[in-house]
Structure formats: C-alpha cells, structure tokens
Image (cartoon, rainbow, N blue to C red; front, side, top):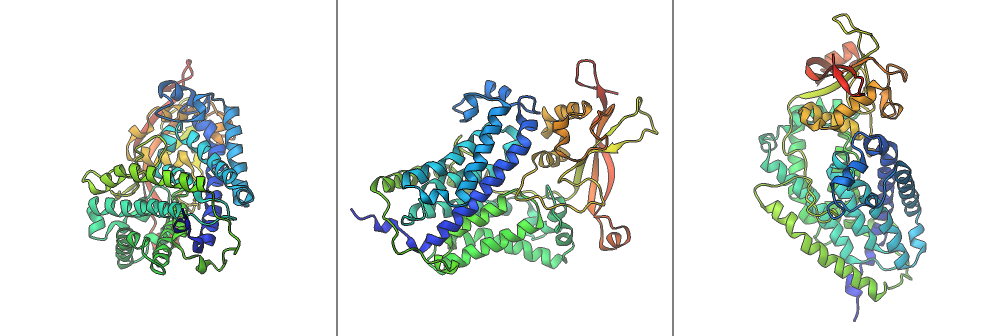
Length: 480
C-alpha cells in the first residue's frame, strides 16, 4: 500500500518553522510556571496542590503530581520542561529516529498537562488548553529528515479554525456592540491587561474602531474557511490570521494566545513562500507511523463532535475542555465587553493603629494597572497569573474565592515568595501591620490630560474589596 497521498513535502519548511515556534512557546510556558507556581500552588501556596489532589481523583485531572507532589519535584519537572523545550527549539528532535522524535515531543506535553490539571483557577485560561491541544498534535509531525505528514497539518488547521470561528461566533451571538461595531470604543481600555500601545489604540478615531470590529468579523467568521482552500488562497488566509493576531498582540497582553494562534497559521503557508526548499532525500515515514497518525486523526474526529455541537448550539461555551486531556476543545473570548474598568488596589501600612490620618502605601504589581503614571508594560507572551486574576476580582469579589484571603495573609506576614510576584514592595521586605484592598475606577487619560500631567490613567476610589485587617493570633486576617 502506498502512503504517498498522506505526504505533503511542499510544507517541509512550514513544518520546521511551526515546530521551532511551538518549542519557544513551550519554553515561555514552563518558565512562567517555574517563576510563579510555588507561591500560587506549592505546598504553602495560595491554593496548594496537595489539598487539590486529595479532593480530585486522577481520572478527572491526569497529572504526575497525583503520584507525588513537593515543591522540589515541581521544580524538577519545570526545569525538565525548560530543558526539553530548549532542545526542541534548537532541533535536537530532528537528529533522532521517528520514534525518538515522537517521544521527545510527547515529553513537554505530558509535563505541561501535569501542571495544568492541578493548576486550578490559576490555569483556567483558554491558552493553556490551546497549548496542550496544539502540543499533542505536534507530537506526530515527525523529524525534519522524513516526509511531511498531511493529516497532522490538517488537524492543526482544524484547531485554528475552532479558535478563530469560535471567537467570531461568540462575539456575533454575544454583546450587541459587536453587531453595531462599537465594542472597540471600550475594549482597549477595559481589557484585562493593557499593553504599552493600548492607550494609543484606545485613542484611534471612532471610525477606525468600527473598521477594527468589522475586520475582526471577516477574519474570524470568513477567513477560517479559506485555510482549507488550495494554494495560494490558504496562504493568504494564513497571512490574514497572522496580521490580525499580530495586531492583537500589539494592542494587549494575552499571554501566548496571539503568538500561538499565529503559530497555528504557519502550517497553512505554502513552503515555497518561506524560501527554504525541502531536501531531496527525505525518507519515507515507516508504516507504523502512518498507522499511528491515522488512529490519532480518527480520535480527533470523534472528539470533535462536542466542540462542533457547541459551535452550532445556542448556548455556546467559551474556552471549555470536554475531556481531561484537553483535546478537541472549544475556544472564544470577549462575548461580552465591559464598558468601565475597575482595579483592585492592595495597600498596607506600618502604623500601630489605623485612623483617618493613616498613611497607606500601595503594593505595585508587575503587569496590572496601578500607578497612574506608569506606562502599561509589555508582558505577553509571558503570563502574570496573579495580575490576571485580580482583574476578575475587580469584576466580582467571588473570583477571589479562597486565594484572596490567603494572599492578604501572606502580605501581612511579609512573605518573601509573595513579594517576588510584586513589582514594588513599599515595606522593603518588612511585614505591614495592616492591609486593605480598595476598588478604583480607571480610565485612560485624554490626549490633553496626558500632555498636561504625563499620566496614563485617571483613577478614583469607588469601594472596598478587603476591609482593613491585621494578623490575628491564629495567623489569619482579622478585621480592624
């Protein structure tokens, strides 16, 4: 039996570029975990993994940490993920036989799945599932010295289709401002973590915002179908995805979502456009490899029933995994756009008693808006998880759940691990006597205000999220 119909060597350079980009994003994801996991989820974390694995069985959250968890074992796992991602980035997998290449690409997927499945609310974002689904399919692309398998490329485009089309549908079905093209009047200002260019995007003329919204509908509702068309149409569609996602990358900080979506468009690019012709001596993949690829394709086709039903149904879910392996997920974002921005501002004082004249000092976080004179930073593709969750707390305190009181407790003890998540600790490592969290309304300065004050934001207090509290004798926060 000839397997030539399953080979697409014209996409050899596209495969190579896709693999390198994905390896780089794996590297970012493991580095992000290494720097933040211990304080968020470690043995003394805000939501400790040992407590989670006692409550949730292995079948619901497949993870190596069900076998054993310690902060040391997590560090070993994260460093292994970084090392393997680095090896993949420099092409070590291409030096291996087919089976070795598959195993090396499977390793970061297993390791990151182990992190996500115990990550709880800190790892509940759509780009976690997107990285896992993409990483699983990348296992079967094979090394550079073999022919390019067609089916994994098509499955990767199927992921991209669901990302774009799902996001387009949720907008069309959701907030009315998407249908009247006015959502971008607000989005750049109210998105979870604005970037250094967001102020400028916000101040584009309103006709430009309407063009942005209209172009978004075309890019997400029409272009995804063209990804499966013959060349050069597929390459044009991929180019549109890359440009529009690049625009989103410039206008906000959405971790690796935009970079990974751009990466997913690479398999649609005609390899000739990349200017690197395939070698003339590519080896034919072994028969067992074709059998594995066919089996994986059948698996994804079967699992795709659930996301397709979700896309066609009226109650469309956003960013949802239908199975604990995070395969064949549904995606989408910003079905609703908030009109006003609120921020949780955490403050402390070293005064023995609190009164009307107490001087409070603000804890400054690395990414979220705080100091009105600080320009919003570029964070993506890195992900600051605590900063993101505080945006949700500003929408509703219930998002703070069990972790917000734990954060306050750690601040009151002057915990060095929590301070490492801060941009600025006003107490220089000492423990404050009291902590509070207030809710502020934020808006971007106008052009005139920016010219006069050099500030990026105007803010005013509107409420309380955590009342003034101090550390009680039992080690928990006490009001007063």
